[in-house]
Image (cartoon, one colour):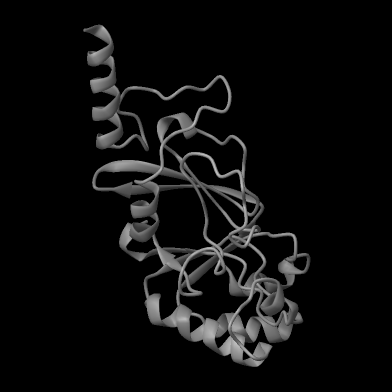
Length: 211
């Protein structure tokens, strides 16, 4: 999958009136909110050739109305089921697939970046000690225990009420440091998902320790 065409978003909550109060969204009613979310989405996601991973809590409308909105949104869409997506299977025609959990691998400048996708933030995830990312939603920007290369991509968590590109996410992840949470420690070698900057830093640490 080409990283130029990958986007992530979560917790759009189409049709959910109370979310405007809970998350202080700047719209008067759900019609205005839905219209803005659709426009924001389509302004950043190309109509063709793009892949959008929605990390859960897509919306509160009944299936027919929800499918109508989904058809207006650009890109091939993939859904990670959230706690408010109990009727998600009825929306299957609008998504390439619907899953509870997924591990995405992106070939980024010749290196493999593993991304663990799940609606809820994970305390520990596959290959986190090799630099893999955990992309989640659910928390609407209020998660207090973010650790390492982990990010809430909900529309209330990142600017613009819109999907964000792989490269935007990569830029944010570059500012985050690995955090040891269990017996898995940072591996000081070039493995999948382990960036050049990470490798250089670990080598320098080892050299300084040897002096």
